[in-house]
Image (cartoon, rainbow, N blue to C red; front, side, top):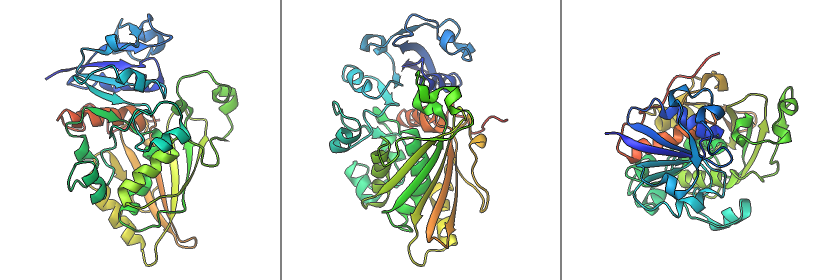
Length: 358
């Protein structure tokens, strides 16, 4: 069976990565691509690397253009998706790569985003472990992971890219009760493509090359409440997190170093066992061998996350290092993986396990 697809916001980095991956999907057929300022241009004029799309033209992003498709992927700026989705009706599977439908708390939305609150959709992180209470609250009975909630979903909110890196690094330890849920810390090296395809002085090559630039310091990054929401769902307790992203001169990729206070009596073997139990059967999460640490270069172009863990005995902390491609597993790959589950397809369909090198 072939599913017809529309991609809104196709001129941006996330939209371009969606299209690159969708081109290899055997059951998705992209028929419509939309944009705002680039409407009327050929897709290849803004994404020259997408040769397989030929002369496909970008059309305006309106509900009318998106109607009539089986699947609609939204890669729009935050605050723009909610307006569009309200008019799409119920016939299509809608997958939002923006933030508009991620947060369950209206107070968190008001605190970090502001504007109209559109409510939470089914969360697009299949590998997220859930407490029994979180699964029950979502109507999934004894589901152990978010994957079960995605089966048959019609509205999906894709996680933030930084959120994915930190959540996958810490969730197994939180879920297994190996660490304290308070005093969590994460520092991320982030490629600037995560900020989107926009003109900004801090994203210019001359500003980035040869420099590492922290931003949203002091808990102000909008992904903070989403990470805390995920870890609450994994462990059942309130979470405190200090999270600092740092722009570094690589086009794409995230390397997150996350730490947490280890509980008394927890050993390195306990940590390895918890992460093996959480990720041992996951196709797109690789737990690296002891002493081998993830690198962004190894996951670029793939839908894979690499996670390495250890205990810093002197500091009494768990250290989890995770690497993802922010546009792959961090956005477009997660969107397609979740859509596959929602439609009853093989979860890995159309998604690359291998990265690109050098």
